[in-house]
Image 1 (cartoon, helix red, strand yellow):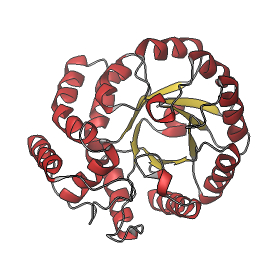
Image 2 (cartoon, helix red, strand yellow):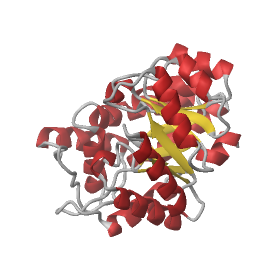
Image 3 (cartoon, one colour):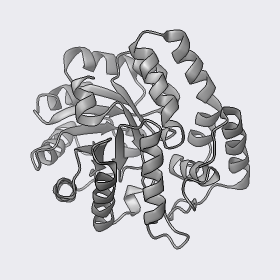
Length: 299
């Protein structure tokens, strides 16, 4: 086990937020999903991230989710709370609420929409990291944030004692290797399509949407890379291509992960909140075919 495994886990899942047909949070669905994630080898559960529909969750809902997941996981998995927004004061408040609710770590997305300077990104991240005693994982996702965390920004932020990791959804493998070579930041792949390349380049683990469905396969992939069994790792990644394609390249990942979990009987409903819509029939059909190819058993 690495130091980063102890802080965040290695096989992390960006957990969806189960909802009833009326859009309220489904507590039975949440409990069943957490049981499923723990049973399939997830050792880090991200609560209230983008896949959890963070833009449409209230602060109170996010804190309640963190508290419920922390209580149920009983230290079997690290609970990482998504607290980032485009408002530094709001992000600081969410970080403190997450700490009080029992989170083990924080996930801090690059401030989006406002398009701050890199100096502003640094100041934002430092303010949130200074707000609690929890370790922080930065989330670099320029496709959603509108800007990237540059290599120099990541290197500067690595000097903060509580900023310990990066969820990289940028896809620049050379930059990732460069930052890893110059810092002690642990990297987690945030692009399911590239889990194997990131792990092979030195990433500690994955932070996966598809892991909602097949965290056990991701665990096998991580183990194979760590022991140097590239043939097995390649076989696992190839077997996951149809599912990754169905979940990540059709409707939004949160929508498709919920559809898959509902298909498998793990959560009762595939409800999402607007502006997301439930998956159309053709996307669900592709998803069913992918699940059948993997022979994922229903709950």
